[in-house]
Image (cartoon, rainbow, N blue to C red):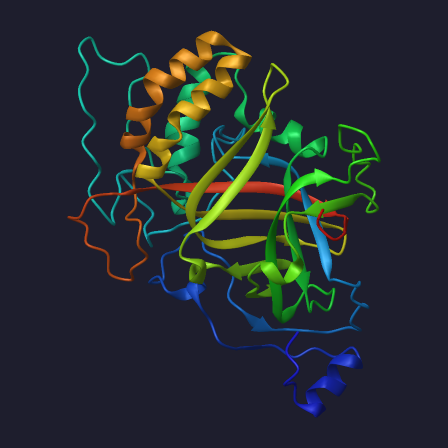
Length: 354
């Protein structure tokens, strides 16, 4: 919460009164006014009520489950993701760049590149809808969301979201947020497996590094929605360790440019959508690791992923990797739009293992 409040206004807020006025805005309003476009809400000062005491170390949340938006909702829409190119994409095709040409294959592909389809409200999530969805339908029995969520739920992997300086109310015009990697919950003395979380707010999670080793991003809370602009990171490494069907622990490292994190926050829980773009070149480098891992679940699935994932990734590229207010629509699409929708809950963070 900003410390630069006018004393008179601060007194009004503490007395339970409310005033509203718009202040500095960022990526929330950089698009022209397009009705129905899914964008994060703008920062406002709209604070009323008595601030809650902040816990030592801030509010710490751990991811409990994750969806990549590969499946449509009952109404036919997708909830994971936001607009990234200031366009509703009425015809579904990218507007900020030119799609890459998918190399032909004799006899065609088992899983053809799907046609471009516009998602509701301009949502951009090509990874979920154009890659993971078609692959899961072809390799029946494979559930990417389920595999990742199982590791999160059991405390074997995860990410911590730490919110500092928050007043605990639905509106706060400045907070600081960091995103910390973790291998999961605290290992019992001498035990090989993490303590299964109870998700009661008392689970103890161990980050990879000390709190000061992670960058802090400025954000705000408006109407109960947390908004964090992370474009300054340029590129982020996302790591997750998963146990394959043979009991071997595999670590995956992905490099993406995440524009923002947006989601509903309360002192006890957080639903956070992280959205951005994944470099096609890095995505293609991950194919052997992904196919090998899924091959332990189903040999047929591993073979399908190995043969079909590369051209699906190329055919999913829908954005330039660089952020620009004036992209060149004739330039090649070098990145894939992604959205990670995580349900997270309050936990306790301790010092990392030495």
